[in-house]
Length: 305
Length: 331
Image (tube, rainbow over all chains, first blue to last red):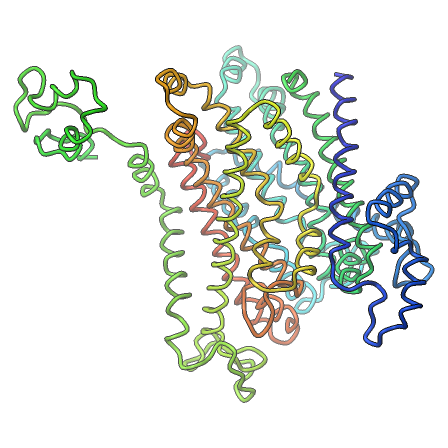
């Protein structure tokens, strides 16, 4: 097991390096530079600025320099907001995105999974049909639709919750619902089908036949085995949640990473875009790592491939 | 059903086709077609009708009410997208401020937007763009995924290892940021949109297809083919790929709704499709901007996007259940 974990951790290094390289090269390919203005600056000034920010070196030198600084926690300085480092901007934005993502994840876990369990245990009853119907609709509505509808009804029409910003609990409600609905539905469907499959297993029949109370059968034998596919999906989803928050942050004006990213792309602030892309990639790689390790614990067969 | 077993009439197309490719068949089989063994007469029940895999799939699919309802809806939507603009005397970008912000009425069947553009016509054009982009992107994603995955799975060894490591690495890329950066680099429009949608999405199909090919490669009939001297190409195209068709079709129908949402999302951010051209994403954006005073503008694209995605999901689930009944969620 230790060997498996170490191998898995070491593998993240080349992955991260390559991801950073891709982001880096893409960023170089964006037309126009941070010093491109409507009124063009004298060539000498542009050259000096490029030299100051190290933009005159060949790309591989810039890349090596970037990685060297990044591992020390220095992601460079913002090219448009004077005096702000990318690390400080990320440091402000990351916790906000994290709260939003984790809130939605919790919603999916605590509503989606139980919904799936109930649907599977009451298979083919009205509760099952209602759950499946709600889950299908929840999964079909993207954030760009559900967020404006939530704002319209709960904020404009009934004035229950504020529609913009972040910080107080009441401001968090609508964004978390907007982002969490799709994942709740997804978890419900996933749990339900995994449960239905496990319920068919011989060991469940055996447990029932030997007289174990049904509640214990479900808790010990069905639920545990059904949650393996849910856990394996949860990791990539956690990554998606963090990136998926882009739209939610954009629509609800939340000062998280997604909003900074979209703003910075339009302002051509390379260093912020690159820094955010690197951090987001790192989050996804880390989430996948955690899932793989969890998976190794849950399903021993995985360790020996 | 009544036609599950058919009478042998002697006129079955399958029997007629026997002599044509008789070269492939062993001597004994050829004899069986001339006169049925055991002296069976024409019209006598000889064997249950041979059911093909796809025939079975079709029968099971048709029995699935949700999937059939969704299929009907999608056909209607397609008809609306194709014919809709010719039903009304308005242009999709024709501005007329005197009729701005109308709700559905006799002149404007779906109302008008803030510029007085007729939403019935505009929505039809938007449906064209959104459906075209989603279907084309899904096609590209699957083509790349299938080729990549089947090459890796078929080659095996170091090549497979290297190709799959590459896929593992790309899995670390967050999808939306890279799609956004790509669209900024390439500018808007349908072509860049397709690229942005496809750039990371082919990974999952390629893994799926590789896994399937790896499993199929173990089968005896592949070994038999190889023993009989079949070329690698023949094994690939005659024995392996046709058996992955099922998962490819399922993946296609799950990919399309994902790309509908992807296109809408990117257009909503002001990237990709932009005014005066319409897509569901741009219409949702316009609706969002006018949300406070004119909610109809968001309700309309909301209904279209949600119902269409739902319909494609039903069709995809229906196909999956029809192709492999073991995966069915409602037993």
